Length: 98
Image (cartoon, rainbow, N blue to C red; front, side, top):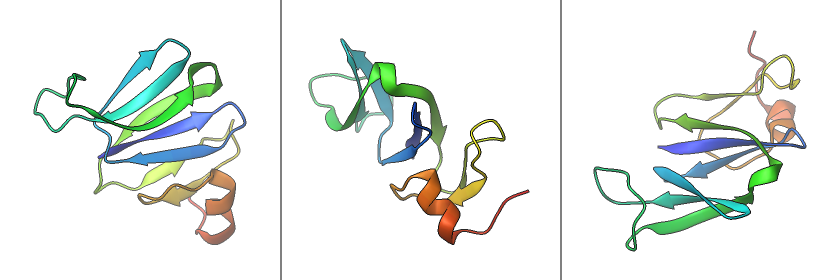
């Protein structure tokens, strides 16, 4: 499981292993909680942080399901499977999705 984060500059980042996120003042941080509740507590491990004002969209992704990066308004239509690359980098090497 993880999250795909689409940023203001239209890049997409995949946060692998995260099962929760929380807004911490100016930052949004993604955590691995290691519990069934998915609640962020003192035992949660922070994995990645992004400035909240730079985030356009956060999408939860199961490991078995490929992620479609972007839509027609964002200009991306590439398939990404569990790696941290921008939509533009994926577009160069991936097959196009119609």
